[in-house]
Image (cartoon, rainbow, N blue to C red; front, side, top):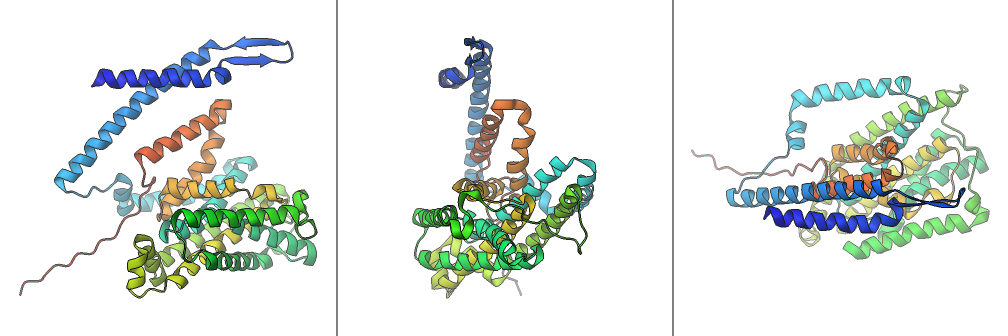
Length: 402
């Protein structure tokens, strides 16, 4: 058995060496017009792929044995992340440490690192908003970037034409995104699964193409520049001060998002979303208005994307349609799936990993995205429920003997 597994891992390593040969071995020096042969890279690819394949197969076998043991014993296993989240001795010190670290971050690290953290916090808002639609309500939305673009262009255009400031447009951007969420929700009320994903994908592309081709409205590919940053009671801030101010503003908005989304999940509408996700037919049979429930999910999920779009426009001071492609929707969806669908803590962790990990893997140079992709694939195979799986609530009825 072991010999067969090692043979399969060896064949996998040969296959990877063959696939990566033109990229990893051959290097053309256009200055001196010579070809450099980097055979050491091929050796590293072979050894690395063999070790990863062997480790992969070992973990797969271990996982299969664990599933069989659980089925035989009939015991519901609680993951380590779930045990830690339930333990106050761990959560309270962890929250204190995270709070102190967040407060000290912009004063300890550089402005570049602070900007990366602001981007991660924007993705936290986007992930929590999409988590309402995908993770809680079970509606696969691939056009989520459209609401992000609506929020960003609301701020840019209203400021350009009417001189409205950040705080005035923040609510308008969220409201416009919610309106577009309702507009998207009406045509897809009867759709589910792959059909819903295709329609929402088309909606996102329609918004992007309108922004790219309607030059009189959105200035087309040229975009909109000189978008002002958020103001602080009329005080003029330099770039460093404005970045720190935006960082703390994003922390406040992220905390508000976490609070509201958590309350929504525990509310009546949140339980209706969960029922819709589990079984749409049974949900409707229990008297839940399916139309209203879906529209609420699209509208509330889009609202947070609108808020994040306004902040994104204020952070970059320049936007164009190239910032709102389908890949942005996929990135946000990866945040939700990687972190754990329906889990607020999981989405937060997933956002930080997805944004920060590629930055801190830059020392790997051209192998950075390869390493990042490997980490994602390993996570999806061995943690299909996400980093922090949703704790499924169970209710038990016990008869009281008299």
